[in-house]
Length: 359
Image (cartoon, rainbow, N blue to C red; front, side, top):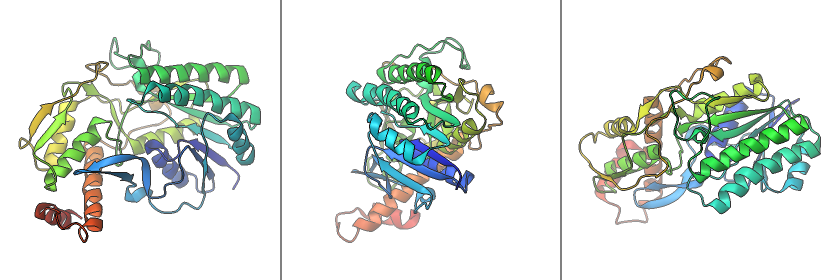
């Protein structure tokens, strides 16, 4: 093994899928993952809702199993000296920074993790004197705020309109400054709305899939809570995100920002209806608009010509991504039901039959 890849946030949603893609793409590479929680071989670090239960989000089958070339280190991204030690020991060829607090996290998490964490990592790389060939900093398409025109290009003005987006934009600016001072080869990846198996339910696609699958299993009433379904977004499958990051490591131009997106505009009502049809519940559920973000913008989708110039082409359509996400919930409910049927006599007959059919 002549090369090492270091990934922060390695147990997160994007981190897990990226590590799996990197192991597949680079069969001789050693991969070192960093995260703030203990190693979880069977689940993501977030929880999902299965009927009335909140459970650790299980890994999709594609991410299960032991990876021989993967080493995981528990470390706080803000602990610069620990990072220096890990970097000196691993001497990575590539670094991918995916550790992040998420939208809806409180400010006392957003800014220390997103901004201070990014500063800590780049400071540690400089102090360790390891000289990676490429560093990809995971950012967010939310930094643009409400766009003045569409599609959104990388040179468009950034006016972030919530604290999460502000924290990601601050992280970008800090990374750009530190990279310039230390001569680090960084690439900024502004990732748009991700979808795929294991997605956190802070995101509407996962919330809808969770509710539809629970209704089908007889675990919930036929009522679904939604936000504003008239908004549009640019959805990209997490597996395409993983591929894009690999491409940016191999061919991304240092000091350049890239939109990581599908380049397609999709309305939220289309997302809702696609999942409803997948669950055979189209027109059969009551819709309650019970939440709305004040910072939501009506329309957003990205210009990805810069990423396309590196031969990136999304493989997954939004329909395929939603089908995978819905199947993930079906499988997860079946697995949980299989573990609990023997000890939970009150499980509804509908849920038992559904799990037997779909499991």
